[in-house]
Structures are given as C-alpha cells and as structure tokens.
Image (tube, rainbow, N blue to C red; front, side, top):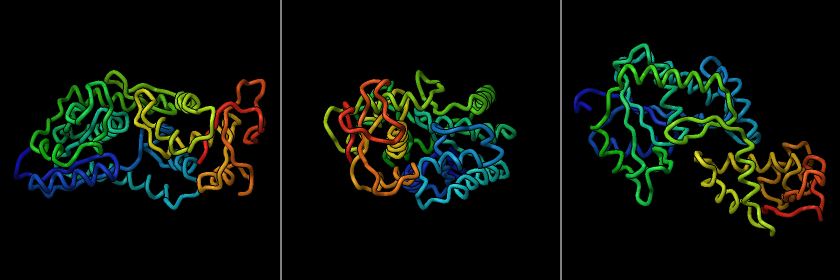
Length: 297
C-alpha cells in the first residue's frame, strides 16, 4: 500500500470496522472505512443486489421486536456498494477465513469488476491468532489492532482471473439462494437451517440448563460456520414453535417467542425435545412428561 495514496477499506461488521480504524491509526493512515453490516452467511440472497425486501423480511424474522430499522440498514448496504462503484480511489477488501467475510469479498468484487485495477485485498491468516490452527475459522473482527496494523502496507492487487472467479462465485451463491452458507475446505458450501437445528438438539441436555449456555456451546460447534448468538437463539425459538423444544422462564427472549407465536406473554415457556416424532406435540405447545432434554433461560 502506498503511504501517499488514499484507499477505501471495506470490512464486514461494526466490530471489525472499529478494530480496523484503530489499526489504521496505528499505521498513520486516515483512510476511509466502509462497514457493511449484513451477514451474508445466513438468509436468502435472491435479488439481494437489486432490492432489500427479502433481506429485510429475513432479519425481521430473527429480531421481530428489536429497535433496528432493517429496511434502512439494508438500503444503506446497497447505497454503500453503489458509492464504491462511483469512487475513483482504490478499494481494499479485508477478509478472514469464514463465510461472512468471504461472501462480503465476493459481493464487493462483483460490484467493482468494471474497474478491476481498483481492487485490492488483505487476506488474514488464521494462524496469526493465538491458539488457532490452520483449519479453523476466523473473521477480521477476531484479530487485535496490532495484527491488522501489520497488514496495512501488505495489500495485494487482485488479478483479473481471481476477480472473474470471485464474481462468478458470488452469482452462484445468489442463484443457489440457500438458507445458510458455510466455509469449508477453502470454499463456500450451501446448507440448510436444519444443520444448525441438529447441532442445537445435540447440545440439549437431560436437565434444564440456561439457554445462554447451550447457545454458547452451539455457536462454535457448527462445522464451517461462525454462528452469532442471535441466530442460534432464533433457531431455538423456531424449534420451540415447531414442537421440537420446550421453553420456560419469563425472560425477554421467552416473551419474544410468545409474541412471535401469536400467544400471550403468559403462555407456557419451556424448551424440551421430543423423544420421537410419533410423540410430537402440537407446534409451540409444551407437553410435560414427554420431553427428554431442555433449555432454560
């Protein structure tokens, strides 16, 4: 990276953006940072570069009662991508070995393929994180500022063949429109929510335990995925509504399930797993005595 020319740095997520801001300051840089907040590893991608509707609907399913204006947030992502196309400064895309970062890389490259000379990248090596091995996942947000700062002057111009490949892979992901996308063996792999659901059910115990404990265990147990706690909580709620888990506890997360299911806030709140499909209760209705494992928040 030239010490004179300004760059635009692109990264996924507020946490990575904040760390990168500190890293650039340490390196004596005051370049612009563009943070894209949409986690592309989960949810539908069809039409994502043309409109925001499908992504807005998806995020509202995950957080139906939050205070985030998802329509505004998703429109901001499209606006930033269009801004990157209009700018003349070179663009540096930061990415780690995980699906969220790799999809961001491919999406931004696809939008900038008309000006290939402007595209640069910084590929973070997972081995730079203490206690990790080469086959583990890592996002840019996981690296300390000093690690990112050391890479500020080691950006790599992207070759035309790589630009074509990444652009094609983005289009393939959009057309596949899978429920989830994993990063396995240095490649994106389509997957369904049932993969995460199976891991959740595997981590349910025979005794009541806090939901936060189960969620924490599951977050690092889905192969090829750096799952967020919000996503895992949502899948737990979907399993509860489907009659796979029971729920108990008068917490915010329980109230959210009750409202999402159309039930009053005083509805039973227990999460437990049915032992067999033949004993399945009606969706969202706990049946005491029929459960083998559970989650408590």
